Image 1 (spheres, rainbow, N blue to C red):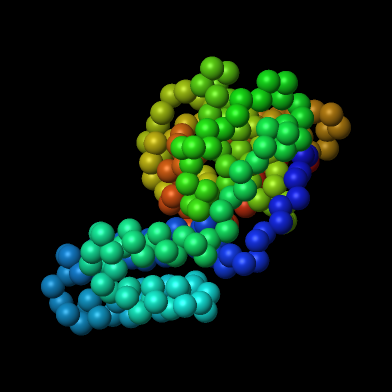
Image 2: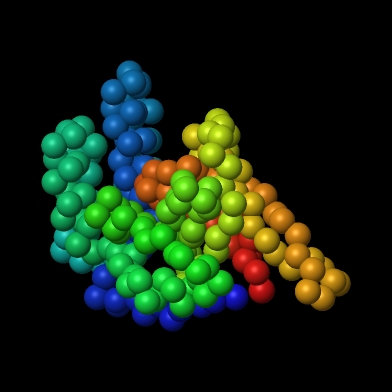
Length: 223
């Protein structure tokens, strides 16, 4: 198992999955405003969303301003984009790992392809994932017990419609096969498969619950 220490910047007070969770709540409120006619129902949804977001946000001026303007933010795409840009300042982005750091996480990989950092929003990245279509492999760097771990395996090129094992959302997925040690058999390995999103950026953008990612890491990591 390859690990890398991960020091979280304590000046930042939101994690990427919490940032995504707040965005999800704004979408819920927006849908209620646009599709529900009953004012009482709208009021209940608004109260629930505000309470949920309040429990996620830290006690800062930026966060409190966001909360106070939440109904208006949910009604305007332009205001939402501006508000989330400000809120992103509180998020601890996923670290942009160097080629050397990635190499330490994937010591058994001789020619490790590098991820395209320019295409990634690290404020919405709970984990790092990228595909190597040439070798039909997928590489994943994910948090585990305060450290980063590297996982890689075969990634079927065939896209399917299904439930992702990481974000637990329906979308375009493929079978990811990783080798793990067999129980009670020293030196023997078996392949374990999971359906996961083909696009890890999209997966991260809808990952608001860490439980499924943690389970995926534990069942696919070679210990």
